[in-house]
Length: 200
Image 1: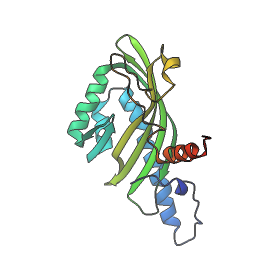
Image 2 (image 1 turned 60 degrees about the vertical axis):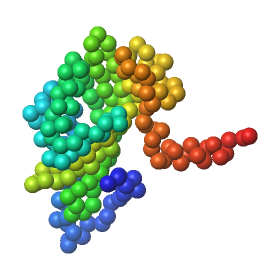
Image 3 (image 1 turned 30 degrees about the vertical axis):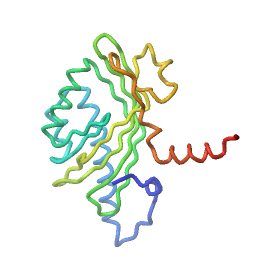
């Protein structure tokens, strides 16, 4: 399921017959926003007990070419993240959700920034989550999260890390390609048109 950009700002007319459905949609949207908002709070607080249940039993988390499936794997993954970074400060920015009337599944995109302490170095990142949400027994949960970076760099090297494609530069690791915006279909389409217009 993917976010339908053309649908997120649609405002259908509310009539007496659909009033309850529209009210339920508003309640569901707020519940999804609460889900996305509590996620970084729990990550930054090292609260595995409440973090992992935010995901469905069969949820997947996609990051750097790896997929973590199910709550047991997610528990191990987040535990490793919490051991790796001694301090984590995640700040969410734009968040849009595509939710149809009466639906129990939805898609969303959230942008954000992170500040992390890795050993004796401060690292900063800009990221994008592509999400799928599912309502299970009255609770909205993550069914799928895909984390992709615009950049990831030590604070000291940030100025040199924003040029080119290899903008993901973790201390002690080889630089690798950033995924956003280069992997986005809209960016690829724009780039193809821009190349066609370039003079020979």
